[in-house]
Length: 66
Length: 252
Image (tube, rainbow over all chains, first blue to last red; front, side, top):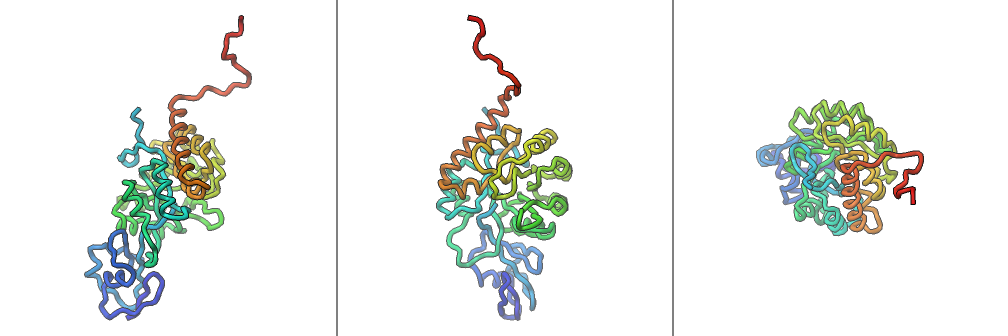
């Protein structure tokens, strides 16, 4: 299945979870937040939330700013 | 003297809130934050970059500085609300510096979108600190909407132009029942002192320090300026007079 992670097209196995999508970028969970199609997925639900084809996944963290 | 800043029920001994944008490295930022004495510092939320080395969060954690996520880069209430929710999830804080800008040239805050987002975030349990223009009417409306502070600008972000409309800042201070934090526009130490003399409860700045030739020294200057301005405000300045008033006896 094809999803976008932070704007980049990626192919993930069918049924891949949010946690697996995050792992393509980082092993860290602390300080990281995820939205799928504009809705926040809380950290506790990453492992149990399956992605669907064409989902847009945003993986954010804190950077210098303000 | 016990003179804590209280925002949303939390006490801060320092009235200087720092931003982290513009520092050439995390080492320079770390030294500047230490010199500033700040206890509350903003960060932005961005897409995770796997190649990034080190994290601003580690710097803040080591220094024991509370993190204040902002919604910088958002142009609509919808984007700002999502960014605040992501920040809450990532950083485990329900505090947010709400920032919704109207255009990239001026980076001036959009009052309509800001107010809309503030109402939604307050309803969602956030402690909301909105960045706004120097508009006393909007400041009052945001306080009524349940914001924990208001953060009027002195001048556009990064401009270093100081406080362009001290009169409006005074009007905001006079009417406010929540802390007023002068945010944006500070160029040098006298600007920060003026903000405090006008009655602001705190100052938020970044660029003036992070892009100074010596960030740690400017941070120290800002720390002193905020403290001096606060003391002057509490002390009560003398009235301005048109003519001299002798400070020595006039008769021999």
